[in-house]
Length: 256
Image 1: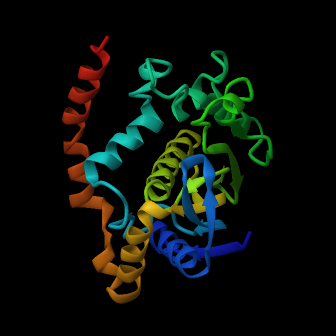
Image 2 (image 1 turned 135 degrees about the vertical axis):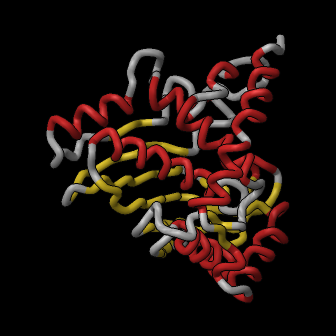
Image 3 (image 1 turned 30 degrees about the horizontal axis):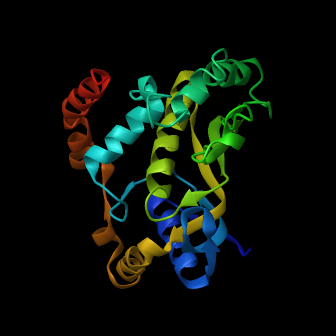
């Protein structure tokens, strides 16, 4: 597998470099679990200023509502009640982070550990649960998150076992950066860099045309035409979508 490292000042810059690298350097391989091919590399994309503008890529599935909902799933656990219902997933990232194996709040541990010793290398949250994931077709993609305070800034480093480049990676990173900001605020420190590592950064064959579309936009359009400023208009759109999201969640909660 090819190992690729890219770096950008902002999240969209780093993400777009990762997409271009996958497009140009990815190997096409079989993915028998999902009965299709995939284009794949091992990818690390590094974001120097996670809150820097423009903060939103236009190149992800969905829009402001979907992005707001995903942030709320990770940060607030708005769909935790669905765990284990019918054919739904057996986990959420929020539940694994705040209620690991039904007994351990890893976010609270991280905050207290970094307060105890700002130099610590022990502020780690583990997402993989070996009591569940080895036996589940939808095992958690996120494996762990580690946080460091260095020079009065909070750094976040994320490891994914698998990451869908076109359909999931940007939303994953945006939400994890939101979590990083929340922890930094609780600690009273600034924001350091964000590093997103995926052992398998891939695009399924069903989305090869979408990857080509993304790559064409990145290569041929001005950066401002494939990004949005978050502060202001886009942030307002996201916040305005919260009532609709909560109505949807309320409807799901009433389902048998």
